[in-house]
Length: 535
Image 1: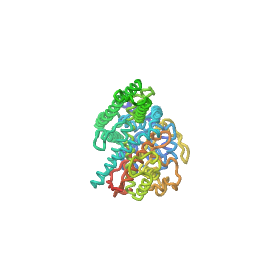
Image 2: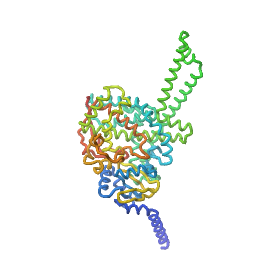
Image 3: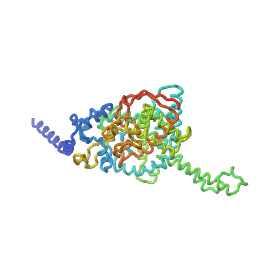
């Protein structure tokens, strides 16, 4: 009896201490009232259903004044879907860290820019920024142009010659992953022709593993997760990806060493040996030999410059110079960049094509611009891409309707003062913040009566209404804006230009009938088939 009383007393004391330690969360929950949810799980059940979660949160945003506080499990959760609050969050130095759920991704694909927290994120962002400069991106155009031709061949053979209706999302994912592997690792994989399919399936699989764990609260504790079948699958796909990156790195390292030896050997030789004894022409003037030597050195420099554009070569330089990056960091960053590009860029590209297929009048306007600005065939240059203003409007409109990343999670690293119409509130350190990009970019209160329709001119045209700068944030904005947004836009514009300059895409699907799922990137419950016709 005495033991039971003592045990009960200790449990009561622990419970009171638990509640007291969280008193600031309860205070802000009282001030910014939202749905309470169920004990211990909050809105966890709604989160576990990705097919209804986004619509559910849209309904709550009309029922409660935003931003409001709710609960995800036992975590205090601030829901945001208005541009004014989004601006405060994205521009705050206290909100640069991702939400706690991203730790599931970092444990699977590595702790890269997409998942890491400060100060690691700040340090790596500073070192990696030059890898996404305009000059570097221009060097990727030959890769993008080459992959666009592979895509056109696929559409021609399967869509036109065979007359099949295509589920083009999988085709696009392979093209985007191919481009990402080449620009990040310098390795051509040949995914479109079933080459290296294990790598493609691994990048597909690692995203599925992360989503399944996020939707399974019982797998949140690490000691439980490590005994699950899902962990075994994660280990398998992660092993494939790590092996792929390390193999490519070793090959590139060996190639670099051999090139370095070859160049330095030539520089140490007398002028006559540069062209080789067998090629020496005694009747050739000495000036011509020097010209030939300079020409070869120029070719070697161009080859070296192209190689240096590859992401892994740039970050490898940081390792060799001792600039606070290890080989583990290089592997993680490469893995995360490929996975993020593969998941988000292919999603945005697909929805743009689908929207234009569902709206042939806007597709014809895109085609008219492409016919005016581009030749019938041949590579597309950066100057030509920058003139495709209507094409960019169509991309932006599709990303407004179908945000590639529907919800972004941040964590308050310190107490945050948040302004709302009715006052200033202190958001306690540790609060999880959910920025609902998908519903904000479809809100009639922000975008007007045509908010849920596809209309590039109404929302991004010259005469469109002026809106808040943070009403459209497909790549986020502020202090932690996506580092690869220029890369993604350039790749999407080029692929779209190649497709719609040569083909007409059509579908029986209708915008209002599409059912979306809110995962890491936006998904559809069912992917409609598309027909391809030659222009």
